[in-house]
Length: 335
Image (cartoon, rainbow, N blue to C red; front, side, top):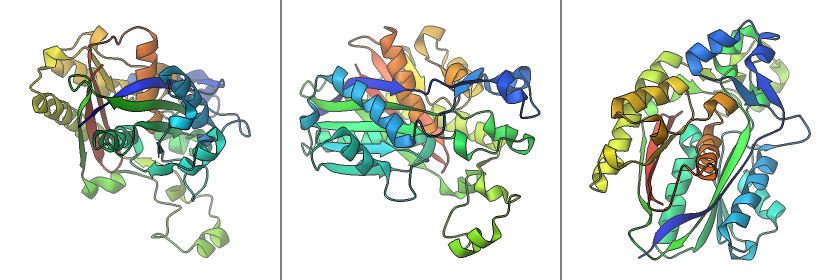
């Protein structure tokens, strides 16, 4: 029996910074309106032709692999979490295997949106714990900007999301007091359409009909979010799954050294922080700079927290996510 540990972390965000004031020039909105509702000040958007979901993931992965000390030849498996793949199929996992020049290892794509990285970490952890693999590369990468409704009609969603990627190398840890202690995953599909992108999808219309219609007013091609409903569910599920992880390991809230929540909305993170009575030093947020990068948000934030010295050996680190599906989960780590 083994534990898995995070041996290396890396992230990449495009250089193109889009501020709230920049958005106000094309959408009927303003900095105060956006910050009041989300806490976001700016986000990154790719320059078309320069980055894709896969290339951002590869750039983050190269940093994580280098920092891990694991040779590229020793990567046993790839797990790629995203809702915005380069192609409808195949998924980006195999593209990473190709672009990194890895051995013909397996590549798995995870489609759990905002919870994608937590789900991917859980899968990697199980593979390592059972002894099947020794080093697993986990990537969360998203390219939202090219698929958003950048008009006043879509502002409730479009001001929130940004592009970026984060990656982690998970490796075998023989000290069972360290590494990933447990992971906890949940879903509730009855609310699937409350945060969704319905098209393109085989369940809506035949592809030939979509091509023939090309209706610019068809909003099903853009993300939809019932914001207040999502917020209310998020704060409940975040609390539940954090407590579930602590209880499974006989830990208390006071044992948390660092909580890294999915960067969905700064107001959600602040609500959870207040509910658990955590200090600013115990919760890491960077949504102000990057917006919501969905599956990439936790690995980007985790990497920044580690780079800034906010996570040290022996610390109890908690990852928690909630998003479309609905799906949610947590990861309890002894660093």
